[in-house]
Amino acid sequence: MSDLLKITAGPFTFDARFERAAAPKTCAAFESRMPYVSKVVHVRWSGEGVWIPLGDYSFGVDYENHTSFPAPGQFILYPGGLSETEILLAYGGVRFASKVGQLAGNHFVTITSNLDKLPELGKLALWEGAQPIRFEKA
Image (cartoon, rainbow, N blue to C red; front, side, top):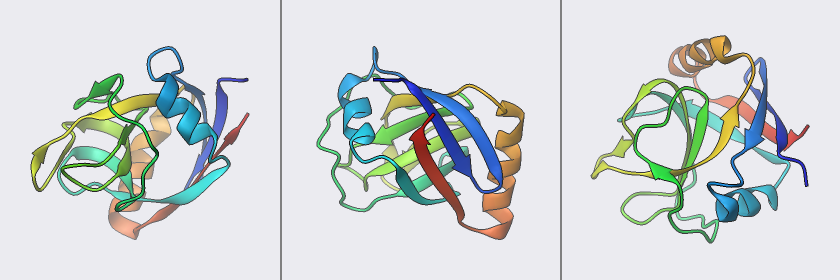
């Protein structure tokens, strides 16, 4: 079971890793759905990030390794409850929130290459709209 991932978002490709030690249930739930393909849009409330809105979809996990302040290159999964289920990627300063207030999500994947391209991805999503994203095993 490899921890290494390849993530393609918009025109960019990133190497990444699962954070299995800190979020084993979230990693397993997400991995079981790979390859995972969706779109990212710019966040509304949280600052410099992009997100995958998932409505009432359930990954079947609860909080583990949760944070409201992911660092650039960290993906968090909000399992739902107060707001809709979502996956968020920070590309700059983030205070994870929704219209109901501050939230926390499970940090389960970290990008390990091309971090300098993250702001470009964020600006692309902000000014040109939804960008495709694909998670696959490396």
